[in-house]
Image 1 (cartoon, rainbow, N blue to C red):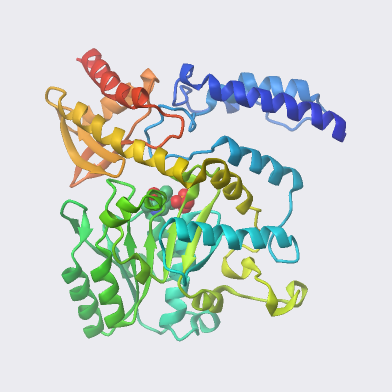
Image 2 (image 1 turned 120 degrees about the horizontal axis):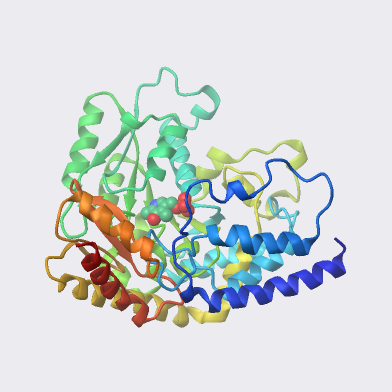
Length: 465
Ligand SMILES: *Cc1c(COP(=O)(O)O)cnc(C)c1O
């Protein structure tokens, strides 16, 4: 393909994209295909001869599209959102086209410098103190792993990268039982071991860990000869939106000289609204590391995860490595690959720049406020359905409910709702019971889309009986 042909196909794909988004409400939200159905339509062996782009795009429409679940569908209420707003998609098209590898300042100074400014914009937008710097990572999982490795290095006097962990006794890390599995996996990968991730039960209206339990667990570990290394708190757990009480956690961390990381992957976006900071984020400035995903609720196309750091030095002392071939430009510049585990990095800051400029902070705040208000309204409509109960009250725009009947009935209802296709919900677990989760956060969703959940739930429930 030459670049003139490329131009023609690009225009065609852009038009296809606008039509796709405008017609999303007419498609079932979740793919309605059986396992293996898509793969069976694709040749087992690669073609030996070149094929025409027209044929490739035709197959894309015929074979691939029926097997897609539509994350940008206005009635997507499953998991958490993965909003890709039009300006962020345009930025990604530019980034894809330039296809730069932005590992060092020198390998694209604009990417590094824009990243620094975007982190600073979002620091202010989230109301964090001046001192925080940060880096854009691919995912919250990577940011959390970076923080856990930093906890490990710091607790071993920055020697375990060199000598390993053998013969040191147990390093211990603390969190609530509401954290995301990315925390467990970070503990595995860091060589700390699942048994050394101490989980404190979450309780109360915010499903928060009890600071007294946390402190007692740390003291018991010290008495047992273990080495506490860090605390991981959560704002907006994946299951039911658990939010830890941050102030007391920071006090405990200071008492025991522990490194702290906050996972706000989903809920962090809502903190652009000061009223939600007041409700959920007291004490946030005390954390050493904070992660949030603009690629979830804020509208920046995946992937875009910001890790704020109060002092980048411990993480740099953990991850920075500088072979001769990467030595460039001296100390005057930032080389963000030294802050993260992967060397290679995409130009992720551009979509934030396009997004924030296009919407302005007020445009983004308005969407998030609507989502929270509509989720609360929907929660009341579901509470009013005969025999239905609210299992967990709304935390921001996430709540969960149960229909009459046992766990099996809950799953049957979720499956029937998703087979129906008008909306998409997922199940979860809370206090040993199956629950049905609802989150509101898709950028094109309207109040009518949100309120349609109550209607669809009721209709599907009645058709099941
Ligand atoms: C989504 C989510 C994660 C994982 O995010 P990735 O960017 O996919 O790694 C971690 N923690 C919470 C609370 C989440 O909601």
